[in-house]
Image (cartoon, rainbow, N blue to C red; front, side, top):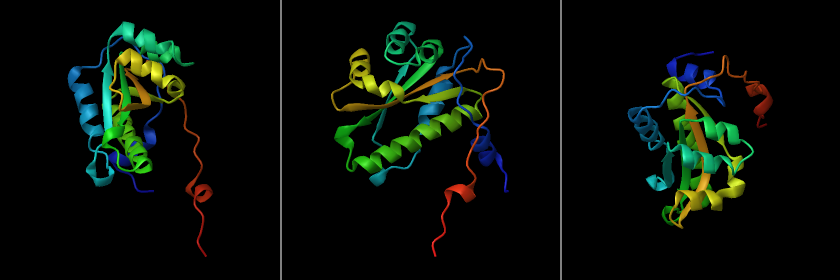
Length: 171
């Protein structure tokens, strides 16, 4: 298999769910958001919007809205990712673009030694999240990303299906 720095970053990234108290710098957070903005989007509409949460009390309030409360409460930085519905031109394409933008954050963070996990279960309470964060009515929560310095000795392994198992032949 071909290997390079980008491929190695993709293959070595894992979800990190336990964080040390070490902070994430403003410059590091800014770099993550810059990388997010370079995801592809239809018509270059860039439908994503972000709320960066570093306040412990807001993090505590958000943690009460998910089964994964310990992860959210312990992360020094949370990035809430929203679809700005008023800039949306095709929902399915915009959702794919937001997925790409989230992946850019995860990969950029990993390349900087920052652990992350993409949390979607909190979507069951997206209206309450929007209330806490006081988001505009046209922002729809897509995910929350928890970020911090890993406090895990070794993040889990990644059992993945092989390309042979996920690719079908056209005959």
